[in-house]
Amino acid sequence: MASLITTLEVLQKQPAPLFYTAGQVIFAQGEPSDVMYGILNGEVDLIFHGQTVETLTAGDVFGIAALVEERPRTYTAITKTDCHIVTLDEQHFLFAVQELPMFALEVMQSYVTRLEQLWAIEEGTS
Image 1: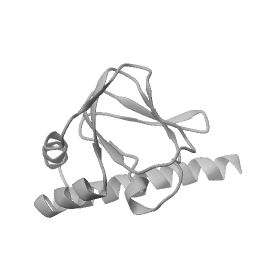
Image 2: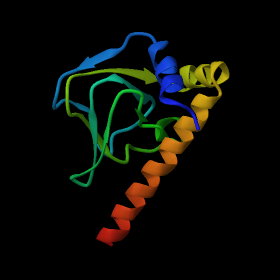
Image 3: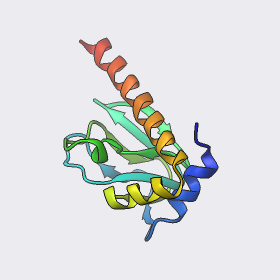
Image 4: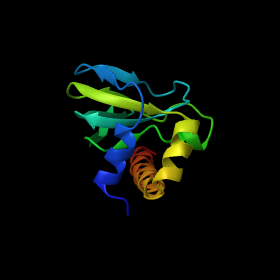
């Protein structure tokens, strides 16, 4: 499994971090997707059908499905605190994976874990 240090190393190499204030929507459920995100500092809540399913912190990545398949966002991402966040498009992601292959494992693990959480919520509401 990749370490937080590996993930932060990849994120810190990305150009032009974005600043979000607390309570700001990064993206909403159902919106189109084309980039994934990584948190340099701060906290982000992931909300699925009005329910907070996870709070992410520095070194966490989200919105990963944008690089896996072309589909609308599955959940809403809202900043819980002020945050510095980077985006990775497919080109930046592939470059990061070539530089630090362990980063790919971290991203895959995060994606699978998040899908399992969302499926559990869907099953509970069905």
